[in-house]
Image (cartoon, rainbow, N blue to C red; front, side, top):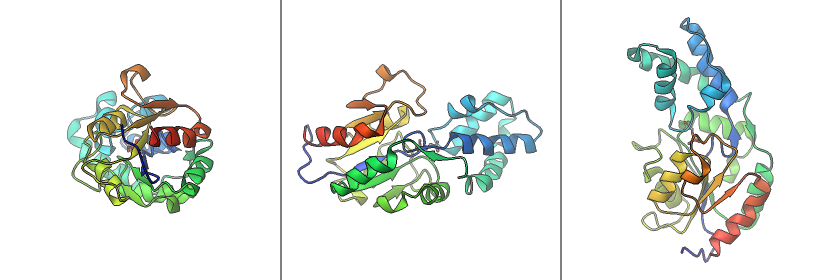
Length: 226
Ligand SMILES: O=C(O)COP(=O)(O)O
């Protein structure tokens, strides 16, 4: 068990955890499909493709639409020009600012570890007004590895002052990428159940599950003291 003597670092996934960004990602995907004369995909479909970064998103779009995989590089490039400024449809989940405020007041160092590239990550954190709360932000293109590889999460904890080799820390996320990553570090994982997960809850390794951010500060305290 990892007892956090001082408030330990708490790192958050971004898409599907702190923010509901699927409407913006969906709009960008469909703009590229339309530009190429391909029928658009529904929001639920595109949402189910999010979590493993832009390349995996587009591999899934290509498989779903029957596009020639050789076009992936150009499609991703076209997508990225839109994605860098796609913030208008993205919202924080209810209770996120309040929960982050409580954790900040209690002295928890906080960070982000996302598979979203850094450009759109910084744009959206500024747009929703929470960028100042995070002492470390690791994006999908910050390192050669992406989640579920543990390297980006270890880097986020290290940047917040934890021992990257044996961090006393907590990760909060919504997906199988996040659960597998937390287990690989290893650190306790708190699962937000209203995000973009594809698997059944019972199939994901986690310390606790929550569906309301009002519960998060208490959960973090109980895991930190365990
Ligand atoms: O860009 C993605 O695929 C999702 O990013 P996430 O790691 O914040 O869920």
